[in-house]
Image (cartoon, rainbow, N blue to C red):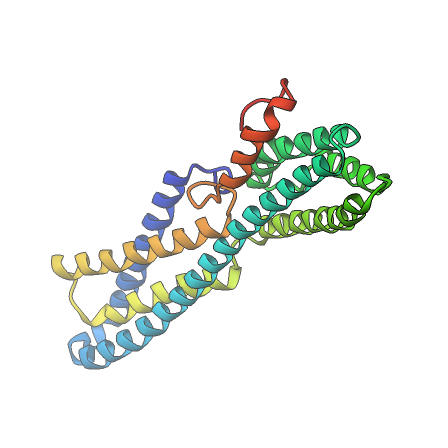
Length: 264
């Protein structure tokens, strides 16, 4: 979901809206300026179209590339979080399987909450869940209470503290990414670019081929805008970052410890 609207419907709305803006701008400009000799303005109009459309395309490309880079960073963050959770889980067992059993159960609870509840909540625009923080706190407190008895345990405890701290930092980054959304200035620049480019075509008559070309321009621009919107909401479809590594870890190592937890 993007803003509680199904992704296909949102895509259709954005594309149709962009095409409508293009046509409205074109016919408005033609109505206002057609009586002033549009045929004599074709050369200038063509020059303006080339320049405005080039700048418009550059803006779209830059924002699209930035959102794609952010999307990749979020995916890398989830993979890193999965690796850290796995490290903490296995290092707790290496420290002492009996003493750390509850801590590992709490970590499994935390992972299940993230997969089954927190990521869907972020997709709906909600903040990080308090119950996930509470499970993280339980794991952190258990690690702080560990009393190393040998060289192996002395080496493991600082590493456990470091990794559990990094997990909390990645959680905050996940929430920040969910709150960013679409930049309003980009949307303004994108829509104004469509309107100005379409208006500059006023010197060309509304023949079927010309209107078809204008429709292609509006449709393609609308698709790029939709893709930018999709990537700006990384926990919602269709631009959803899937926590594959975290799911694998949970299903293979943790889910069996919590028989009442549902599968992600």
